[in-house]
Length: 241
Image 1 (cartoon, rainbow, N blue to C red):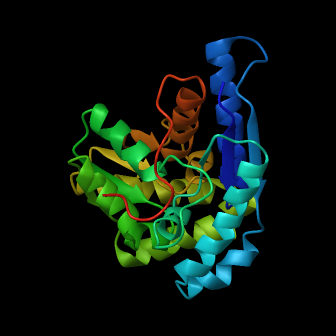
Image 2 (cartoon, one colour; image 1 turned 90 degrees about the vertical axis):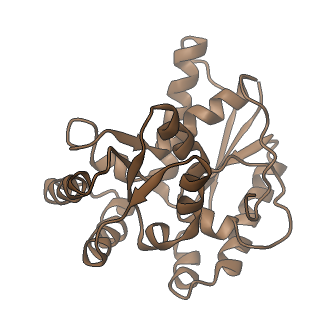
């Protein structure tokens, strides 16, 4: 089996991806079995000032260092369970030390296979306003909608003030469900939970729309590669054609 490297950027999302990959491996291989997995994470505080200034090169350098640590640990490829981080990973720069799966392509491909046409996109303000998901949706022939600007600031605050710190409240769950209901009213037939912590807050039972869970989809795709059921990725950062 191939060795999975998990490039963490926020602890809650990285932990969810790690556990989901372990559970997926056991479901497919048997009790207590899963591919070898190494997770590395630099403190999110190292990157936050760079995000506020949109200094993607500086964030990319931090993430690239983590990929080098995964390579040194013997990982064959990496996944990054942080949607916003992919904006930095797509920025120009030297090839990363390992090839990786791209979370937006995984999520968009899953949505297209399920027959959805227009997705609501929820994530940090950088993910919602950035090109990584817009381009991935376009590559897969999908339309998408965003919450209005004031609601984008609300969910961004929920993410950074609560979710990445392990706080999951009923008040925030209802607020996010209301955002999804509004996206449904705008014609969306599914919602992409494209902050890796949002699936910890809201699930299918709470959502007015079917959910595209980027975190668990990424974990499943990683296990597919580890078990040889999918090819090793070739992307080593930079723009995707």
